[in-house]
Length: 220
Image 1 (cartoon, rainbow, N blue to C red):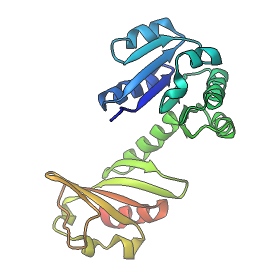
Image 2 (cartoon, helix red, strand yellow):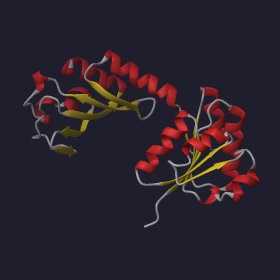
Image 3 (spheres, helix red, strand yellow):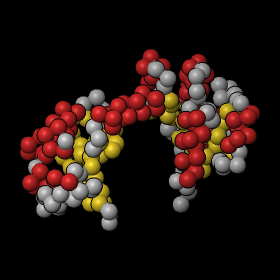
Image 4 (cartoon, rainbow, N blue to C red):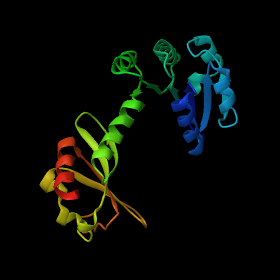
């Protein structure tokens, strides 16, 4: 089976970290940056690296970027280059174009030009860290939409031995436990009879209000 191929444009902190993780997960990655030093640093880490101006359509065409499964625009602080690169990628017909936004306005422009997914790494990380700081049992926090969130909550000692039926988050709070991560493995879609133990991790989905109420009433 053919491995998915990714082109990552912009090899700063975010782009290089993303590229290395994709390689670790077993995918092929082409790294592109106009900075020769950044490209040299990543040349031994990635499948291929190229020094190139990503706003030049002919250059990206010659690199065969249109044949990649996904192109990620991870350009650091040059908003104009980020937008122009995204436009070129869309014009070339790249299947999936993902772009990093530096601000809400930048993100709106990227959405307008048809970028398939806009990510806000600094903003999202800030939100996640803030939630983790104020909620000691909160291990991770991912906003699925403006209304829905998925969180990982560590089970405190006082809930040890309770079943999902006894906790009953769906009936009492409207949120659902979709998985329990235990020492010996993960239970996906747990049944009412499944029991939680101290330091298990519950993966819960619901609206922000539902999860906040469940966390406040049950976990803290």
